[in-house]
Length: 247
Ligand code: FPP
Image (cartoon, rainbow, N blue to C red; front, side):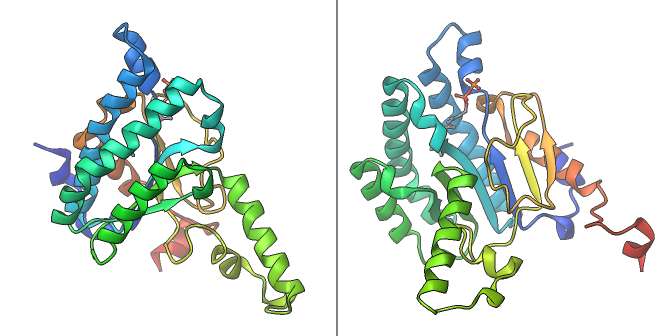
């Protein structure tokens, strides 16, 4: 029996975020280059996107490239950018067939021109799709995003567009790259690392965190269902006590 059959369809998260980790270790175990690991990570991206779309999950955010990743060796950065362009080109047709809308969060201006163009084309083509929103975090870091939001708010205050009293948590969320999206209820990180690594720090405030040992290139639909079952078995209290939730 598949773990999919054990899922309660009416208790699925509306937004799942994933830190795809372990490509390098997966490749090293096979005596191969880190890039080989990233290439094999694409299969897992495809699987998890398909699974999320099939289940009717609203948003899937994948941490594909952090601002810190720019510090990796140039050959690896270049290979990741090329892989991204190739994957987006190859998969646009499948995204269309599955009604998936592509979106990118991150400091887009820092991406090479050809990557930006390729992403913009796919975002445009998939913009009227109404199913899953596949949110790629590229050149993204949460501290960058929060500072960027603070600067925009400061600007709007000094231009008298808003007043300081307007600022509250919901208002602040609208200045983030995820504006208009629900916060992720579940965050998955693969490869056994148990850190958040500057990913959606604001948005993950109440998320359930799920860490598994599987290296990203080995992550399959069944692993995704397992994470969702684990999530469904948790009690989300938002600071309250169990008895209050039963009312
Ligand atoms: C982390 O593993 C993975 C990345 C930094 C890149 C993720 C990229 C992909 C899965 C491929 C392309 C993605 C898309 C969306 C088309 P790591 O290199 O940090 O692994 P390690 O911790 O084992 O060294």
